[in-house]
Length: 351
Image (cartoon, rainbow, N blue to C red):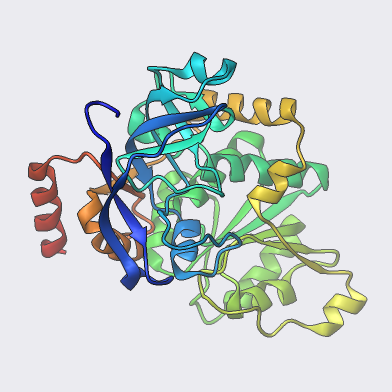
């Protein structure tokens, strides 16, 4: 029994993958084993990886029914024992979920103590976004520096991750070509201080990209879109260019890729998955990354929270997030008060 309760509310994928199969259910509160903790969830963001998981197209698939949600923040209310677990008891933490267990879109979640970080003075909502985007940006920086690249191209650049990357590249003095799909996104990134922003819907987009990437010697790209855009960027990058595909927002495979560029210009396309990147890092490297995230969470790696939804309105949260991805993160908050729920509903009606 936890806080006088044996069951909790959660959002589950029950009859199959797909948003239509998300249901609010009452399930037993999970029990932590040795080395694990039970967290009372405060917030959990919706990330593109969550959308892909719910659709059934992510790299991780679980036995149904299952609870989605890859990261979040909350308070440790019970432990299964073990040195690290005991040290977290009663503490506010940011966490990632165990891919073999249920996720964070529930009132409580069990995860490994090793994947929890005390939030310290950081805001609990901001802390819920401590892992996926910040660690991805730091991983990108590592890949850029290791490869000796002088300039970078990034697609879906108006996203929360894109804004982090703009600030990180400014801090590092590395030129960044930001690719977006609407003029208001161009204006938004310019206001953020981005120097190079291209609109992929412009008639001369490919011409602009070819000229700018040649001028800056942008030989690396991180692509979150795939589809036709992947081919456009590949064909207009300089010789020896390499693209890391880390998302598939278009839900399409790469199109229009020049075979000649693959052969004669030594261009390459690789996949990038944060999970695999971190698996290849030692424990001290991982701890160093986490330490950097904690230091920069309120500045370079900060996240804007655009909206909040309770467990009963996850479909609406998905809709809002997909319509306002440039606005910031949407949080799932299992303990949201009814008054706040009503405010969100009214805001969504107005839009």
